[in-house]
Length: 311
Ligand code: GDP
Image (cartoon, rainbow, N blue to C red; front, side, top):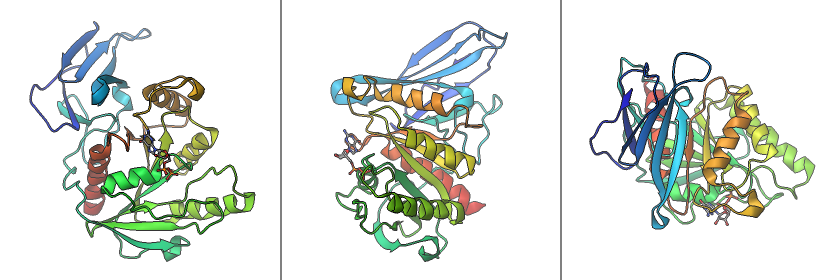
C-alpha cells in the first residue's frame, strides 16, 4: 500500500510515501490533487503499481490532468535512490521526475545573451554546465525559452531556413547556460541546408563536454511526427542525456489534429518510444501560455546541474 504525506508543499511538488508493494488489492487514495493506486498484475502474483498524479493544468477551465505513471517509469535523478527503504519521495508535477536533494537555487534572476556560434568549437569555453533546447520548427521553442527567463523576446535566433543558423548561448545567473539550437523539420528548407543543420547540431550533441541534457521539445497538441521519433531515437541510441519537454499542453483537442488531448498524445509518444528506451527518460508537460511546467523545468535543471557540478 502507498500513502500520502498530508503536508502542504510548494505547488510544483507532489508527495508520496511508499510503504510497501505487497498489496494485491486495488487501492486508491485521493488527496490534494494527487492519488495513488496499486492494482494487481494480470500475469504475476506481484502487483503492478500505478501512480496517478492528478492536478489542474487549466485552472480557469477547471480541467484536471490525469497522468498514470508506473513506478518503473519514473526518472530517478542521480544523487537519490528510490526504494521502499527510502519511503519519502516527491515527484515534480506534470512529469515523471523524482525530486532530489540537489534541486536548489532553481529560479532565474539574470539571463544574458552571450554568443552565436557556428559550430561546437566556437562555443563558450568557460566550462559552465549547459542545457540545449531543440525541436521541430513551430514546436514552441522560442516561447518556452522566453517563458523560462520571463522575457518577451530573449530568443533572438533567426527562424527562417536559409538564414544564419547557429548555436546560441544564454548565460543564466552567471553560472550556467541555456542553449538555443536551430529548429529541425522545415518543410521548405533545401536539402543541403537541412543536412548542414543536422551535421552541426549532431556534432554539438556528440562533442560538447559541458552539455548536461538535451531538452527535446515535442508538440503535445498534435500526434508526434516521424521526425520527432527519429530525433528522440537518435539521441537515445547515442546515449546523449535527453529530457522530453512536451509543449502546448494547454491546447484543446481538435479533430483536425487527431482529436486527442495533450496527455493522450504524450502517452502515445511513450508507447511509440517504448522499445528504444531501456530506462525512462525524464519528461515534463509544459505550456508557455499558462506557464505550466516552468518551475518544474527549472527544478529539474537545478538538480541535474548541482549534481553535475559536484561530480
Ligand atoms: P518555435 O518555432 O519552436 O520557436 O515556436 P514559437 O515559440 O515561435 O511558437 C510557434 C507558435 O506556437 C506560435 O504561434 C506560438 O504562439 C504558439 N505557441 C508556442 N507555445 C505555445 C503554448 O504553450 N501554447 C499554445 N497554445 N501555443 C503556443
